[in-house]
Image (spheres, rainbow, N blue to C red):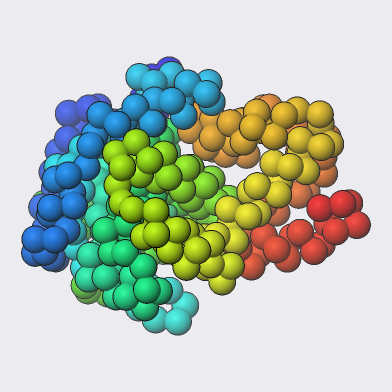
Length: 315
Ligand SMILES: [Zn+2]
């Protein structure tokens, strides 16, 4: 399986990607947060253990480990990050840039959230980094259909574009500090986040166990107050994907784990819902309409509305 990264309809080379990454990282560094605590946490990440966990996921899901886009510490920045939403600008804790192929977390915002929830900061920082890394491993499937200016490829200028993403792995509405006017459309937002978060939670727990990250009480607290918080949208998304795997499994007779691995592979090689095996499962379980509607869901709320609509068909 070769690389499949396209900009403006043409496949980009490794060399071009390096130039884009360099340009984007330089821009992001203008908003860098200098935080010794964060730097130390980043330095202490055991990349051998972490990358081995990604390789194991790949092997279980029918993904060739050589297709994994594994980033290192040099592609992890700590920046002030904002998202422009319907209700105005909001500070966020992390993002992965598919165009730049780097990730940024916002340690100021993470510390604030950790304090509010009463959980350990280090765990939340690692959890956030792992979530963004789960977005990054499938970098090669991104088809980014936007109109880039020539300057973008040399890293000299901001991008201007219109168009659609194949998936939500690069969030168009995220900016650093100034307001930008970008319009685009993304697909599979909620589903993609659901798969990513479930994968990230699994990686987080296994990594914590393997490196003996913290004591039981701190971890239990994090699990209970954060990962187990029913009001947190990401946890609702995980619940949804688990329910979906269960229903598909019951209806098709395929083992639940196999269904889950299919979702992982689907999000990795083709757009999540385009995987022939997944299409078949949905055709057997629900109807083709369900699949289309699922792709349009933007939030956990939309997924649950969909669940309600299909209640009569047993979801
Ligand atoms: Zn995400």
